[in-house]
Length: 219
Image 1: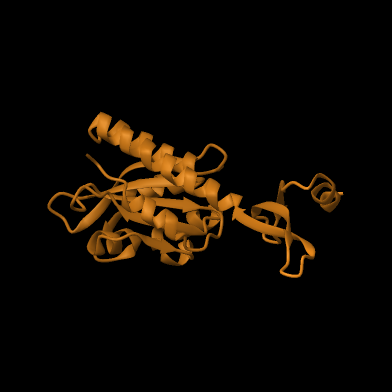
Image 2: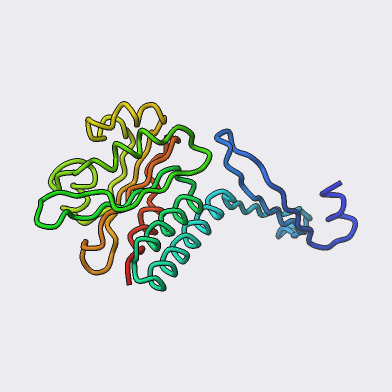
């Protein structure tokens, strides 16, 4: 029927449809068909197929949306505590991470302390994790947040429990946290602190997301 339409109507024909890869990713496919003639005068149907990963396009849109949302909150509220908390919530909801933390330097000490923490409502039994996190002071030269503070670059961790502070590992394992992403707040220095995101999903390194978080900063 598809090719009959091209043959009978003698006009180009376009169709679009969505397929699913074995990994669940959506791919949008466009097909354009038209009649062409060979040098010998034989008529053939030429079909051009184009495809685009719908999931990746949607993900890029979410990354940019999160970046814009965060920038708006931070600039309008001048990075107050409530602005930071709103930012953590925006990042978590827009990008689909279940826990988001903000770490800041302890004045006069080579350590980092928790400033704010946000947990998704659908993540249950977070009280122990949050309570322990509020007591932690992390060495700036160690742990994930310390490495980000020292290096000034985002850090993706695929084994959260193994890299977590010893005091919190049992609570982290109970929540089933698997992936983390830490990055400095970019305002020309790392003085804005460190954001750390956690997910119960096992994510591979997302270079687009790393680029997005590199552009998040305090104005």
